[in-house]
Each structure stands twice: as C-alpha cells, then as structure tokens.
Length: 304
Image (cartoon, rainbow, N blue to C red; front, side, top):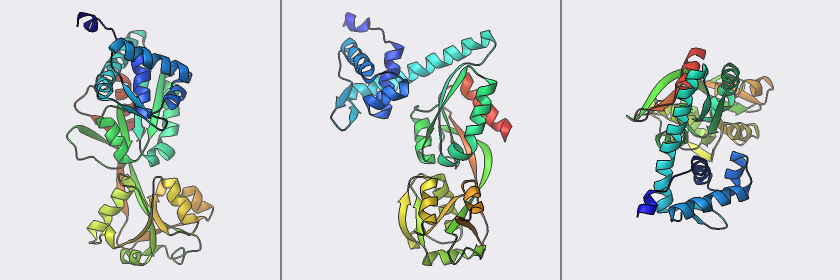
C-alpha cells in the first residue's frame, strides 16, 4: 500500500490517456497529439504498469475505458485543467496570455462565425492555441458538462443550473427548397403547407432543429404530422440533400448566402413569421474557468 501511495502521475501520460479515452482510438490519439502510435501505446502501458490496473479494454474495433480507467479519467481531467490554469495564471507575470483552450462549437458557429474570430484572437495573443471540437448543440453542451470542453458555443439557451449562458449573435432559421421547386418563386408559404412536403431534418440535439420545433409548437403543429424522410448530422448534408431534389429542409440563413446567389437553393419564409434564435457561449457554473477561457469569452462578446 505504501508503494502505491508513492506513485506520481506524469502529466504528459495523463494527456495521452485522456486523448485515447476521448477519441476511443490509439491511432487517432497519436494523430491528435502529433506523435507516433507506438509512443502512445508505450505511455499507456507504462501508466497501467505504474498504477497496477488495466485502463482500457481493447478489441480490433474499439477501445473503451475499464472501471478503473473511468475513475482515472475523471481525476485526470481535473489535474490537467488545474495545470493549464496554473500555467495561464503564471503567464500574466510575463505580460501575456498563454496556453491552450479546448472548446466545443455547434455547426453554424463552427463553420460560419468562429473561424475568422479565432484567427483574430490568435493574432492578438500569439502564445495561445485554440482547439475547436465540432458537434451538435446537444453534444457540445454535454462536452462542457463532463469537462471535455472548457466552454462552448451553441444554438440554444440550456435549461441547466450547471451552465451559464452568455448571449452572442442573433440568427434566423429558414426553409430552403431546390431552385426548381414549386415554392422557389413564392417567397412565403403557410406553415400548414409543410404537411404535404418531404422534409429532411437535422439530428436530435441540433439547435436548428430545436428552434424549428419550437416554432411549430407555437403554431400548434406537431413534428410528428410532418413527412420527415431523412435525418442528417450536419447543415451541409441538409443543403446537399435539398439541392439534389430530395425534399425541403431548414438551416441557418448564414449557411445559404452563397448557395442562394448561385441559384442552387432558394430561401422561403412563413406567412406566420420568422424563426429566430440566438447563439450562446456556455461555461460551467461549478468549475473555475481558466484565464484563457475568460479572455476568449470576453473577446467573443466584444465582437458581437
């Protein structure tokens, strides 16, 4: 027992361990960390030997955490976050902001809003590194709650006491149809007209889908009454599906400016009103965020 208590954890090994746990792959972890796969395997083996427990169950198809691995993952995230925060705090004595920020973003902010702002932020603070993980709004929210991401940017305000939501940009969700569709020249349709159209939906957890379903509910129309022929996991997939003539769909107006100009897709709105929403920066209320996270959130608010 005394020998076990004397074990000292190596932060680099913990970072490798967390990468494997989150990516569920030794090869993908190696790519993400810019090291070789044998290096990842060697460090994990050394960590397991040092701790005297098996951390992963490995098959040819997947890598999953053992119960001991799950316990270590929880504590490793806390240790790595504390280390990052300490380094960022110390960087203040050198007169600059330093460190790495892992954050999540839903598809519209990730593809159409954040990249130029990230570039501007990194120019202003060249000693920082921004790692953006893209997913649905629901997936990003979950990653912030479980500590995989320090903060996030999503398309709805979470109803969760563990999350603080900071308003950012306004947005509009629009109906899109292919250029040859019967609605393409009308501009406006009644919401009841949707009952007779094949529709492609975003997946559960999407902020776009949530905004559309709320709009339907406000007008006493259940999504179950619609003819939903497909669900897809990205805005780009919705646009390609609609452009190919597969049906009509709903996306952020920010995602169709170029396509509308090229006559591939047409924007149609409802006679009953517009579907509006807001994007939010989300941070946990039960954890202290790093100086870099605080600076990035302030920067986003300033850009709005």
